[in-house]
Image 1 (cartoon, helix red, strand yellow):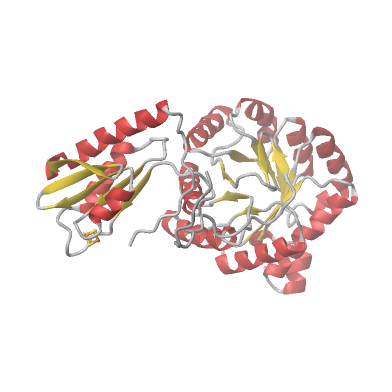
Image 2 (cartoon, protein in one colour):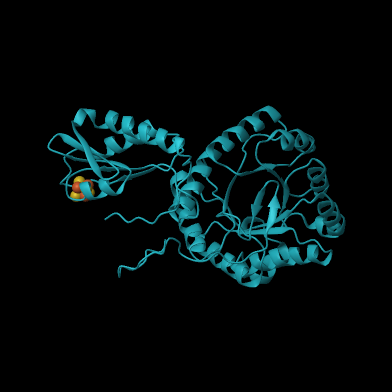
Length: 385
Ligand code: SF4
């Protein structure tokens, strides 16, 4: 059916076309090109503790993480890689600093990719030819991960500090060493703890190359600060189409990083939405405790995979409008809640019954969605006043 324009402006569903980058494959997950932006995290266990590491990877997988990185600072960690790479449900990247021999170990172990840091693995430059050959033969991509805190001494001397130019030069220099040996299966990160420097570095890198980019604000801080920094920096870049895979770094359990990463992508319509609670901030007009109601509804629906949009509104000003736009909603007032399903008021319940009624109705809609095979939502743009 041809859409007929009724004179209404189209609502854009994305902020920018993705930058055209070359595509690589981190195990089963494509990164770059037309592949969706993926979310990754890093384990906090000792990698040599295989049981604990696999347990954390299982938790990360359950939280939606698509790629996981494990640190490999010792021989014991390197020895654990074959089992971890084999048993992990998602592709495993070995994170190597200082010891080039572990790069070979990680490739042999069947890791989906290896991350190296050009700033602290200088010995590595002499072995690029061998590493390029081993990685090329095994089909193992390499992430060149430049970090402001461990910038190559030569570039630190040249630029005085970790400027965007210094980060980019370091990354592109290292990449050129691999390219000289015909190895092109590379992705790059240029992380800094200052979102402004980081955004500028990635912009420059994006303009100068077609490498797929792994976005990260390094040492972003505790959960609240790190979430804001990452959302701001990733938002700026992703809204320009820059970024192919993301890692939110928080001083918090890694599953929290994944939650934040997924939410950033969902907010930018770069990932189909799942459960979304549209709740008002409350104000002097509220006739119900909106915070409590929103928390209770969120807790009651936690883990729901279908793209349900639930509106929890404090009064009748925006309440009925928002509630009608959602799959399910409540507009509260006068000690009661009007429950809407797909735009229709289906019942009015006393305030004490709002939460249980919403959860009950949500379950019914979710069940129907699952029967209909709806497991993820089309990205939609919504605006709530
Ligand atoms: S919906 Fe009502 S209570 Fe909530 S912020 Fe808007 S006016 Fe205030």
